[in-house]
Image (cartoon, rainbow, N blue to C red):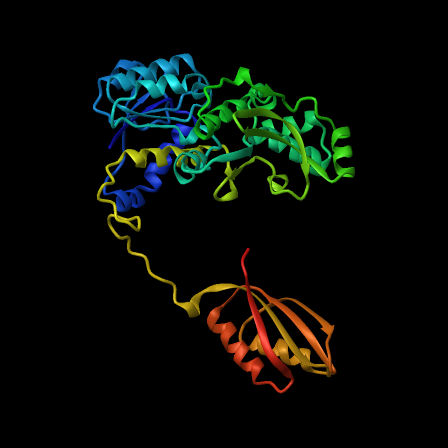
Length: 414
């Protein structure tokens, strides 16, 4: 399948890199490969290895199957998408601002069997569009609450956890590349509002623009607000909220005090999360990176895969089975936790540590506490070891007279 990219910024570079990196996986799953054959740029990019053009007509007249709009902006991007659709090409975009204003116009342009993908427009690599549009499509959405802007979430996390001022946290976000030189849309709530209008269309079928809803940013939040929040076990998050009550839908974006024990309270730094409540599944959480070239590219490629002819794709996911080997159980490596009851007498710990050492298992931590009938409970965690080693140690421990009852083992995953 041939692809034309509009723009060659962070996301477009991520798309190109991911297509190259995952080319074998794509071929195995779908029986087709993706080729970038043309890139539209306003000025030549020295790091772009593909054929470039600054004339959009070249894109329209090319044999590309899909146009990926990754430029940003609204007016010019909309004109490009409109012309591409009129030419019968499939279109994919990551442009939430464009969709906030033109999504229904675009929907009305689509021809039968013409695909328009926009998974990357909300929450970066988190596949929330497909979750709402497909996975939960038969359910009634009671509410959606989301952390949809990584920049504001990073700032609020630093203010809450480290006591940074708003100004210092913002500067830090800019230095790390989470915030633009002009972070206005992030901190005033409009970026999240753009995304919320898209989710609201999917969940409730409402044609709402960002200016129609309550939007409040984080620029007035101070350390005094976090002092109060801490005293009452709250944390502060910028939430995008959609709720249905009868025939009414409430949409808003605003800083919100939420219980520090709630699931969204633990979404930190630049991560995104969307908590969806519907009348069948109940609460479900979708969490991940909301920005970044490769992360957002993941969502763009998921739309590209929808366009590839997958009628003959196998039920379990692969058209051509990749050559993967199952790791032998004895070779599985992890860390382990052991709990055993032993006689409370001199030399027991020495025997245990000696057995572990003889089997080349390193102890990470060891604790003990009294038990009943002159016994002690021993708790051990190990460094990395394999199943063959741990099985041998368990057999040797069980054969010792000082070990009482069963030994409990739990694997540790980090």
